Image (cartoon, rainbow, N blue to C red; front, side, top):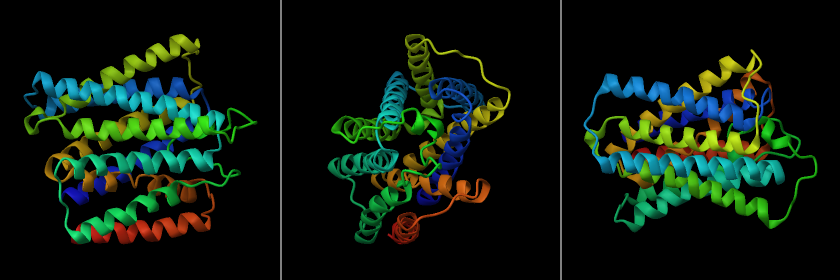
Length: 292
């Protein structure tokens, strides 16, 4: 059951990122992120009230820490895409965000079976391959869309790579923080997470002096992206409470696959060889993890 929930969260995460990518082609990325975070906050409050829960202060603190880590990671990610090469930044971030929870889970005593460990070992390169984009590709497996072409003269130096690594650590820390919340907390840690990340991005907008208006065409996809992202977070939170962090986090990190599939289906973008290999490895990884 935890593996199935983690896989479902990956599908919903990837779908949210697809809509987020469409939105960022029509408005500045920080504006889209801020508004989608606000939508996610509203959805989180409604779900938390409906589902109930009795969170402790510790649960809410972990949620807020996760929100700040995820929001900071997203800031590094957009910077990396704007100043680096997407085909390097995106897979580096994806692999790092999957690897960090695995390392922490194993270091804190989690012991998946041998078969599941083999699946995890396959899943990590699969994530990188699926997220890999050729420089002329338009699909963005992490929902950054137009952020990838904010700069025509992208750097191949070390700074974008460091930003990608920092982004991956931030995303991985978000997964870890949610795993630290209690089973009785309901979805209230996600409310705390969204409050923290929405506040962070409000400061980013003020610092950047971004305009907050959206063209009409960007609003629906932004709202859908924000709502789906929160639903994915909720599914992931349930999965991580029932399963091992090292297993659930790596399966959830397969989300670029659904983004790429949607880009192929809706936008008629082509797969390239690395992505096809990644899909094959991902399917084998999920099968091994489920069996393990």
